[in-house]
Length: 113
Length: 110
Image 1 (spheres, each protein chain N blue to C red):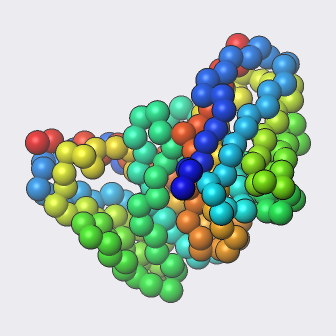
Image 2 (tube, rainbow over the protein chains, first blue to last red; image 1 turned 30 degrees about the vertical axis):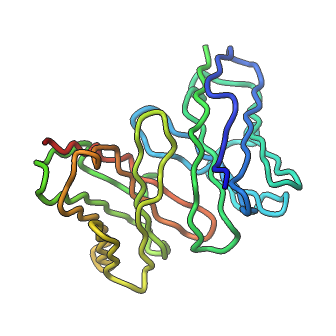
């Protein structure tokens, strides 16, 4: 059984650029969530996708968008990058159901200069 | 708004003793609570959870207690082992929105 994987592991961008982060869900999982973890803080919920549709969103602006594909892999896109977007971005997958456990990937560390 | 708070950024205990990590929350709509452990360069790993209809859940050395009236959650690890040294996050769920605390770094000394 393959766990949650994310790519790339590290990324450096400049302010104003756009970035796409990728996530492959754990086998059998059809729900994926993305989180932003700034230094010294806990993960902050960005949004969740189920059956290729967004079905939950945290307090993040529209320039944070996502996609979920039929094979349940997922992308996080961030437009017009700002310095404060520098963080660890975590993807988590689970089976559908409110109390199913989420399994996290190792994250992508994004640095915006 | 920080709906889930872990007020102790760090905790140090001796091997074999009990570790108690605390978490407070403000949103009464949270109905499911979880603890995650995180090692450097890895994503958080699920440890234990508890539904709001219970006040205790135990799994081996790990026990989670929930006090709904106080909106307080705690994780007990006994006996603590050096391999337990990590950052521990508590999390609370309301529908599809999961909120995390800022984490407590636990160090277990041999």
